[in-house]
Length: 318
Image 1: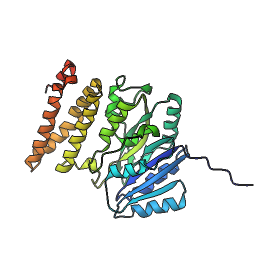
Image 2: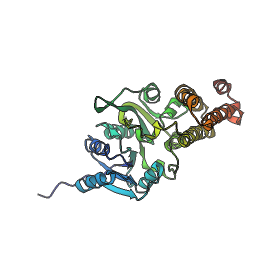
Image 3: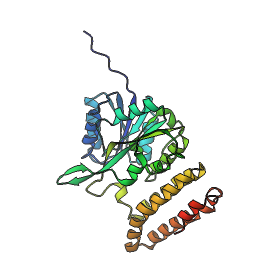
Image 4: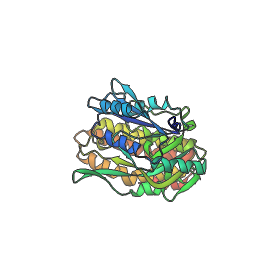
């Protein structure tokens, strides 16, 4: 009897990684453990100097659903994702960073949701995974993630659900590949997904949000995650530029409710920790950059759109 034909993949998962060889096997296992097996994964080694590339090569040799792409020198996360996007040939696509893990039903739940709704993409909840007692363990859904993804909403727009704009990570979403025609990540900067996420929300005809946890986002114990480097001035510049860039997308699309939601979250979640760093930072340029950022937020009501919205003006009056 001839072997059963393997069904063609429905989903391409783009998995970029650099120097995270200790964590890549868990990411690979999380893909192989999916209840929905109709996927193909593009493993992008972004110029790693550890064994990340070797782990990727071994996975591809053992499982035909994995393909490896490689940068000889690191070009950054944006470029690593873009090289994968250029090779997508399935109806749906998603992202998984090489040091994170999918929950077992993530792809199945994403696909089932989009099949029901017909939307352009679905955004799920996620949790941080931290080292506890020698092992990484997932925590709880944070309040801003819950506000963005709960309760389950199908076929909504940003005007109907502005709090969705808080979910700016690339890897919490599954999209129809057609949404990415002409849409790519900025390169040579950190926090490259923030502006892209807001473009997804504003360009999509409709999207879905679901409270199901799809990803365990690893907070590396060695402190090497980019989100753990905000005390470094170049990282701060990229971070603040990404925040303002995302808001500019929302303002340009006339999504004032989402602008209010983003500013409220930035004031509650971002500024306090950045202010604490600035208070003790030895370089006065850090304080100056943070002050300039807050001045830029306060200047937003001067735009034609924001000036017409007294609620937004009040939100910036601090």
